[in-house]
Length: 503
Ligand code: ZN
Image (cartoon, rainbow, N blue to C red; front, side):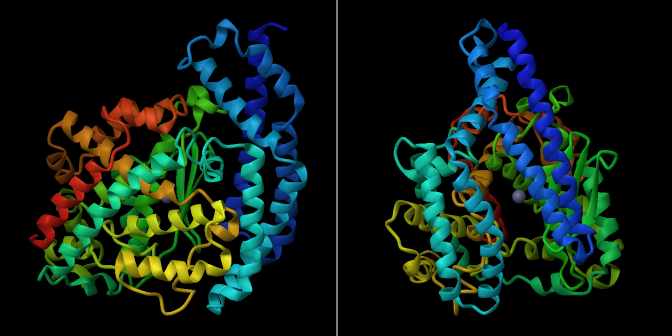
C-alpha cells in the first residue's frame, strides 16, 4: 500500500467517525432541549451504542497499520502541511485511546452518570460526605488513566493533554503564578474604591421574548450566521457543533436578570463564531476542528467580555436595549448600565464571578485538582483545603460545601485537567484582542457604529480557518507575536477597571 492510499483511507475513516459523533451530538442536543423526560432510557441506549461503535473504530488496529505506512513518508515531511497535521492528530487520538484498557474506559463510563447523580443530591443537601466515596473512585480512575497514557513530569500532564495539547502543567504553573499576584492587587484596589455601582438595575423585569429578540439581533450583528446555526432554550447554556454548517446554542432566560441570558448568549456565540469560521474544505478531518478547549474558550471570552462588556459596544446597543426594555432601562444612563454589567467583587460562585475575580476561582481549582491527582491532597481533606484557599485568595469562606467544593459538576463528570482551560481562554483572548487592536486601528469607533466584521475577519484569518493546524501555544505565538503571556490580560483589566473604579 502506498502512503497516499493509506492517507486516503485514514481520512475516509476520520470522516466516518466524525459522522458518528455528529449523530450523537444531535441526540445529545435533543436530550438537553426538547426530549420528554420519558425518553431518557432510550436515549442513553442510543448514545451508549454510538459511543461503542465510535470507540471500536477509533481503536481499530487497522488505523495503526495505516499510520505506520504514512509516517516517515514524503507526504508528511513538512510538519505544518495538511497531511502531516491530520496524521499527527489521528496518531495522537489513536495512541491515547489504545493505551487505555477497555476495562478502565468502561468503569469510568459506568461510574460517571452515577457520580453525577450523587453529586447533584449531595450538592442540594450540602453534604460532602455522601459524595466523597464517588470522588475518591473518580480520582483513582483518572490517576490510572494518566499512568496508562504516560507523562513526562507529573500525572496531571497526561490529563491536561486531553484538552490542551502541547501545554504542560509547568507552563500553567508559571502563567497562573504571575497572574495571581497581579490580580490580587487589582481586586484589593477595586475593593478600596469609593465608586458605588447601581447593579440592582440588572435585576428588574426583563421579558423573556424581548431578551430573545434583542439577543438574536446582537448575535447577528456580531456575525453569527443563523443559516448555519440556531438558538434554543435549555437548563444550562451550551454550544454544540452538529456539523460544519449546523451550530446549536442553547440559553436559559431568567426574567429578573438581564446579565444571565445575555452574556451567556454572547459567550456561546463566541464559541459558535469559531466553529462557523472553520474551513469547510476540511470537514470531517482534524484540520476542520478547533485546536484546543482553551482556544475555543478564548473566543467565547473575547466576544462576551472584551467586546460585549465594553463601552463602545454599548454606545451602539444601549439605545436598542432601552427600546427592547423600556420599563427597566428607560431612565438608566449608559454610564450606570456599563458600570453595572462590570461590577467587581469577591464572591463564592465561579459562574457568577466578574471578569477580574473569575481567574482566581480557576487558580484555586487548578491547584486543588493537581494535588488530588498527585496524591498530595486526599479527597477527605478537600473541603477544608477549598475553604482555606478561598480565605487566602478572595478573603471569604463558604458557609457550606454546596457553596464550596460541591458547586461545580466537572469532577463528578471525570473532567479533571479541564479547569485551566477557562483561564487559558482569558489569557489567549487578551493577547489576540490586543494584537487585533494594534493591527486594525480604532476598533472602539467601529464597535460604537455597530461594526464587528473587521475584528471577525481578523480572527477568522488568524485563528478560525487554521483548525487544528497549530497547537494552541504556537497559534497564539503566530497570531499575537508572543508566547502565552499573562501581561496583556492584566494590562487590559487595569485600563478598563482603572477607569471604571477611578483607581
Ligand atoms: Zn465556554
